[in-house]
Image 1 (cartoon, rainbow, N blue to C red):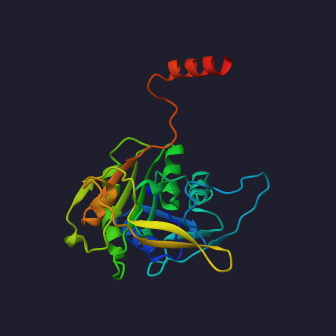
Image 2: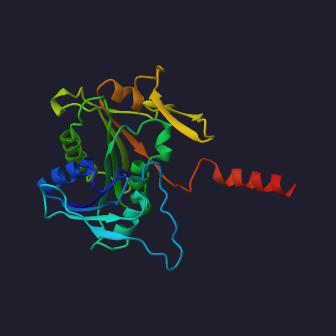
Image 3: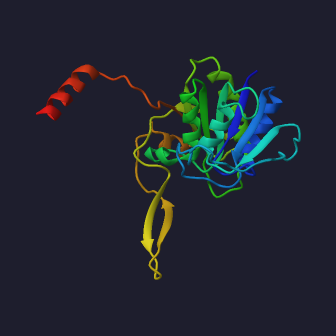
Length: 258
């Protein structure tokens, strides 16, 4: 069993994170919930201001139907919540970070902006693995127990893999027995929705989110979750190596000097 910190970008009161906490606690894992005190979607891996002497609010939270799980609401974005746990604010640092389950899919290149994904990526910086888990909306009541089942299965697998493995998992909003299966998905050019901006009469900009009508390759994360599969994508954060890096640096240096 593992020490796991749970976070999200929907806030500590979100039913998605409660479902994961309860499912993983029943599996025997040591769970600590450290999540934003209110919604912090779209923060990516941002942690906010870290100036010397900066203070932030923190308060205990009770997970519904499971009072013994340690849970905290933090006045900060999800990646900062992970940072506090990694620095020992809630006991021994975790062995695994799980972010979610997010209310809505996190697919395509837009995951760069996802607070759910950003929080999981922070784990890699601290030498541990991370899982970002999201559940796609389909106009029906959210079946959060499905995310719980997926989380339990994913933890069993990722704990056997090398440290600093990060997965982005998206699941349809269906009961586990109705899922078509699990597939490895590459990042699509687009997510499941399209965001646009329109100017209002008062001169402000209004965000408009609509369904995206575009055909994507069936092996992409967006297409897979749309087709009823659980999509799993491996993510890599900051990495300093690369192909022919020394020669590229030498070439760059020469061009700058000239």
